[in-house]
Image (cartoon, rainbow, N blue to C red; front, side):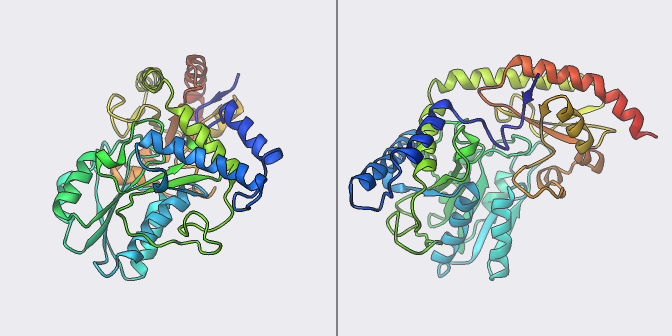
Length: 384
């Protein structure tokens, strides 16, 4: 049997996504910037994808810009906004457990003379909103937070954060990295006070290498990719029509019967968390299962290094992760586990299980059975 429990790293495409990607590669393969019929057909796919995404967010189609994925969306949101608003100030606020797609460009901006304030989280991954509020200044141009932490599933109260940000400084732009949140939560940027929103296709059963950035029409942001002036001059380059068409289809499908899907997902997560927590020397990291996102559980198997357990499970056809899969294969200290002040043993034995609407109870039962079997053996060898 095979159990794929690494859906925060990437997801299996919907069949309909596969079909439209193939169709736009093999039949309707025109360049959407071309003026002939093939180009018009290709452009229609791009417009339909923008419309489908805009409907899920209740925003305007013109506020959706397609990118090469979540990393580009985050980089553009941060660097493009910082440069466009530098005369107003150079102060930016973020949190201590952001993905590298946010923390790395912010570190680069720091080298360019911007001041970065990092707000801590508690041992469950809860953001200290009062510290965020206190950090906002007249020269704060940008605040960037996750919606859902990719390693532990902690959820940032983005609507509350947006309100205090805009109450303290109406000119401050609020960016949300929703790469693990879109598709799991109903997100309405205009109602919630979100100015910029980053999303990645392959986390919602779409193709890899494509994503989008929602940019409120009120936000001042510089383009980062210049050239032929595609996407209203904001993001040049020939549109990735197969990727965009697949993303639009995935965005529409992921929100069909959404409440029912999330109820099922949360039930599976609760079942997995309960069984893991009953095992000897297993600690659930981050939020309590009832409080976190519906698809992520992070657990430390004390006495066994995470890589050892990961590869042992892999031999059984079970796929999990030891932290974020969006970084290089070289293992570095987990920013999220460090942010919640986890000790070294917990950090080095942490495994992330992430589910999707394709996950079954049979996969979880098989995984739990194998963990119960191998843990005592691995701990015995670790002692010698």
